[in-house]
Length: 284
Image 1 (cartoon, rainbow, N blue to C red):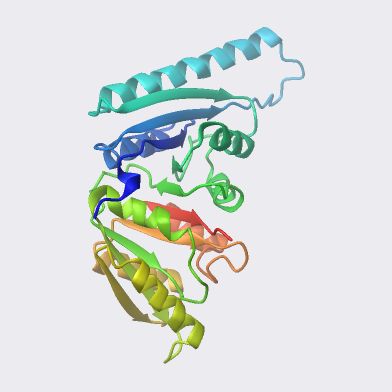
Image 2 (cartoon, rainbow, N blue to C red):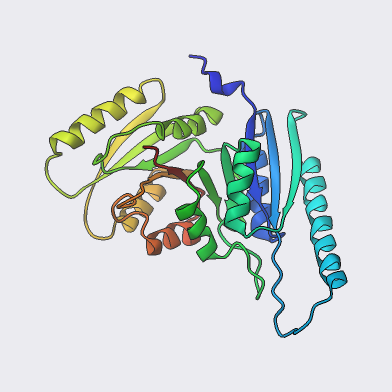
């Protein structure tokens, strides 16, 4: 079955603070979309902390900004040399807004359909994609899906996509990014349900049936795991036992996938996870 999204050009935003982790995420993006027409936008949101200086000359600020712009140009050149697809285009964006504002503005200006970023930023005092910043991007930027790539992650073709869900809410347009992700490499979607009760409610059954129907054109399976404690432990075991290459979740406005995306869990999955984590904002 041919799907219209396969021929379209993808617009992918890659925030960078010039750290190894940010470059790891960029390499992952290039390999994930190696066969697809894409425009990659490298964004650097520049901020200056004066530290102990009482006065900073404008010329000093200009020098620092020029350095960052030069780094950004270097990242673009590196990406061009790594890309194997003539349909890959690269743009660089230097912004003076705070990171979240810069990301939101760029998404709207350039019709971004996905953000790919590292889970940690540069080490030292000038951290910019801090762990807490990653969490705030997940929490505040609900305009498009976000793929988080762990530090030094060696690319593996995502043949297996894990999708934990409790079936408590109906599914809408947020299933499309998960299907688009599966389309790239014809991946199997493994739905995970951690069952705390013996039987599903009427609502859960209806939602599960809808999900089955919606995934009928995709390789998929439904997997049941007993609830024996912390959900993140059940998810981690499922990832290991099923060779899951990307974990995907829907980020709901309230309840945020019940216990799944509370900040400590995001920190566990986002920072200690050995695999990329794909967060899809809930659409009303």
